[in-house]
Image 1 (tube, rainbow, N blue to C red):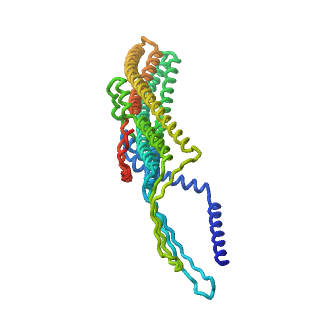
Image 2: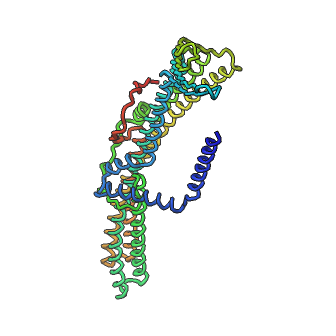
Image 3: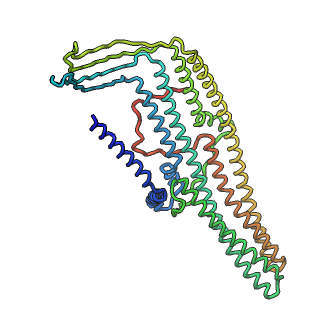
Length: 468
């Protein structure tokens, strides 16, 4: 006996020493360096695999669906709900517990030592347990709701990727326009400097032309730096390193405004919007929980069977079996079950109010998104007309300035106004596309690419979901 205790004590000391040495050997800097190296290596592998060619908008969305962290988190949340649903289903399965033991003893050392073994098996199966039915029904609804939530998250990622892509395109076209403007401003500044040297124009007019050329060059440099920022934001949305090289293929087809009047758009959104579908599921879940609380007033009936075996010669029977029914009925628990049932009914009413609030929110979102899309369309039309007028005005002022009919400063002002109008027209076109993409999301129409994942298998216990 003392030997056994010594062995146990020695093993405990070894375990404690091992844990202490493990804590003492932890190096935060080394761990951070290893994690950083591993993470950057994984990002480099992704960049090498995904960014070997210019990417279209659809390519960027496909990459974001696979690598975006919010999308991956939504998939993990759904997996947890699936596991919870399967755990709830186990309430309908029999419970089996087995135990075994071995004993030896000798009352008198002069007598031969006696040894015998024993084993037990207990089996229970619920027959009438209504709370398990409603618990499983609520778990099924929760799993279905997690799928809807994951889809809605992906719709938001599609919108975010689209916005980042259009922002990058708009900035790239803006930089191209600023580059041509900077070249024209430099040429005009050189011409003005020559005219000033010859005394044909005032010195300050030459300085104004030079200052305008420098302003265009500075604005071009800012636009180029902003391209790097927007490229990094798009890469982050795609789950890639913001430092990775990225080339985009070019403009994507412009979104088409959904047909119909505002009332038609609202009705369509109320039919398919994921927020309302999620709210419906929550109402059903709380309805199941209210029914589950009501079952606390009902008895629970189950079937049981117990078997035991022993090798003890002193036992009357070597094996024994007992089977039968058993039931339990809580008659009084301090009215706690009554309070839980009332609380469940209140929570169900809260979920109904939340659905009504979501109903109104969707209507407002569609109204606001439709108004923004119409405003963006008007802005495109007006900015296009403004650019046409500014270009004609500059052509007229420039021609007259070359003939000496107008001072050069008038031509410089006209040139600056035309450049600003051109940049505004470019940006207005992409703002319209973004507004239309926002309208699609507000209506729940945003298309999500199909997920091609072999691990996404259907669950055998996932039957057709009940409609709320």
